[in-house]
Image (cartoon, rainbow, N blue to C red; front, side, top):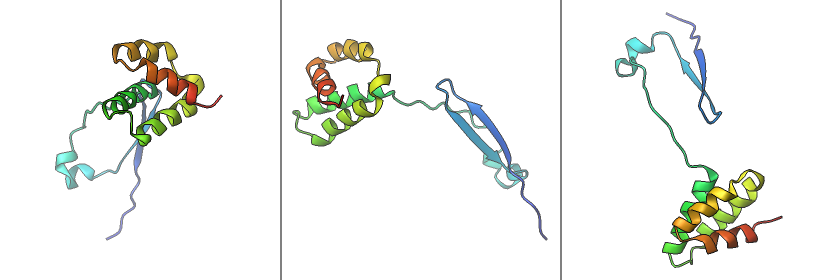
Amino acid sequence: MSFTCQPQWRSTYSSQGLMLLIASVSGDESRFPSRAAPIQRRFSWDTPEDTILRKLEWYRRGGESSERQWRDVVGIVNAQSARLDRAYMRDWAVKLSVSDLLERALGDSGP
């Protein structure tokens, strides 16, 4: 017996503008009953600003000795430079007691 498998593609957009492509093949429901019902999941991820702030917290808690955390922070600042919400980061940096580190990271990043 032979058959042709034609996946059905469906795309959806998240509020962040991320396009997700979902493929299904007719008959999956009978072969995989546990997957027959649609799965409703929410995905979330940190913004670059939140990642920077979190890494600055880890850096501070680690005695400011982790080159990896610092390198990651500076790398994110360099990669996202023009898109970063600096006011948001500065506001939260005060609350998290990492303002000095944030200013240093912003200064250590490239032009």
